[in-house]
Image 1 (cartoon, rainbow, N blue to C red):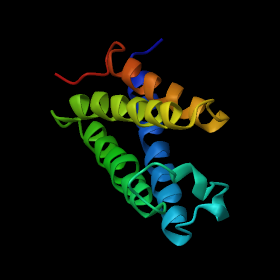
Image 2: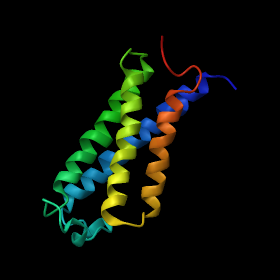
Image 3: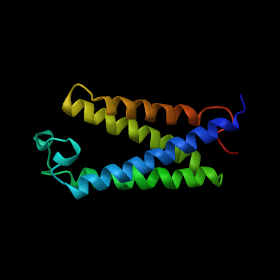
Length: 132
């Protein structure tokens, strides 16, 4: 298989992650209670926040805009993009792992995003992905 395909797969995963992060974060900001998107305010019990505004801002910035910037860096073959993509994948794995530790049994979407983060990191080490 052509090694360039792995770069394109990584680009697609980063762009989709970014769009999903912006959409999810915007939904949390539109309804800080979380009820409108199927979240329960009880999920925040024991945490130092009372609504989903901060998680929404985190999603927009770290899981939304950042992957889009990284995808752009990969597209342009900028030297920092590879390390940023590894970091982004790791951040996604940590974010979802934290959710699972806080709330117990994972939901299907958490498993999806956990695998997504692992795949992003793995793709960074695929042949032809790292720019010279």
